[in-house]
Image 1 (tube, rainbow over the protein chains, first blue to last red):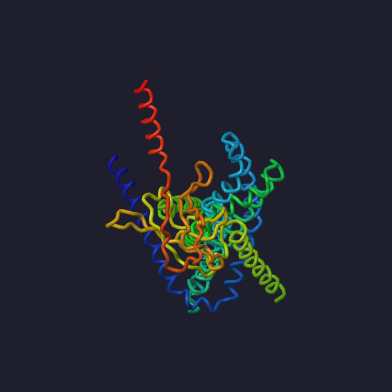
Image 2 (cartoon, each protein chain N blue to C red):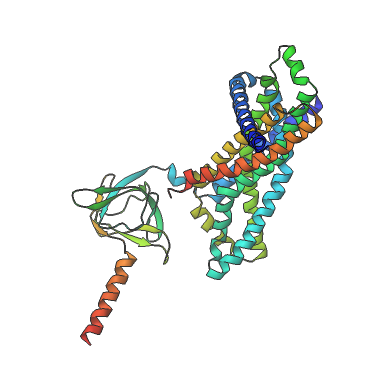
Length: 261
Length: 157
């Protein structure tokens, strides 16, 4: 009986490894199909609309509020040290280096990732994917690859919009609400935020996050059990796995990019 | 067809918004300046101790930033630090006997190279070396010296 329990644990681990392997095989086929899917420009544009444009509202609103809260809380701490002129630096660096890429990736995974997984899972459940294969249309080239390209392209733009709107929100709270000096806010920020080190690395992070979260969403949908329950499971798995992967990768990338300073 | 066109406009707007955000971040939030693309001339200076000076540290004259530190080397024979700086091309009137000191902006701020112009009529050119230098103040040595002097005073009493 206890042996059964151990066997079940082992089976779970093997299942995880099998899924990991299938995910990489899918990635391989998607990367192979990339050159030929470029001619599906219209489809890619449609997908960018689906994952990018439709995420704009949540990204902008969240960015605004995150920036505003950062400014408020930062002020509460900095005022004890008489260092409120560094509030602009605090808000900008926090957003550009970490919060911009990470939070927008989490929101993207929740909104666009779950939509992608559900869409592809439903296509699989209604046998559209196998139908395409029977008509000699490669579903990976026609369905999966354009969505992958759209995700990787949209993610850095969303992160940049998040950071920019956040800085703006921080400015409104710092200068408008808290009465700090406008010149000090911007000039200190412009002195301490380095384009290559901070913004460049932040954009690099968001490209990696876009790659990984889109890949997770597409795999979960493609590999879903073709039932209603299976599609639902794929959707929730996407959100959870994306969150975990983004946060873990963020630590690794930060350690690689920012510790030499 | 019309829906496709609206969609394309929306996507184009999204890309434009994203690039505009990136542009705002680059121009207004970061320290991206014109000095990166401007031509300049390189000079070197030797110091006993450069303290916390590092690459991309600013170089100033009279408080105005005129260049950046491009590299720091160590001379194994004279045990000195060699600092390479790039100065903006338009500031080409600095005399040959300009002195360089490593100062700290504020009390705990970042360190920078401050240049004090001398009285020579020939200007500094590309590849020249600044002869008169003053090393960075290492706070620990200062404190150590201060304590040592204090101890000597009480000893005399």
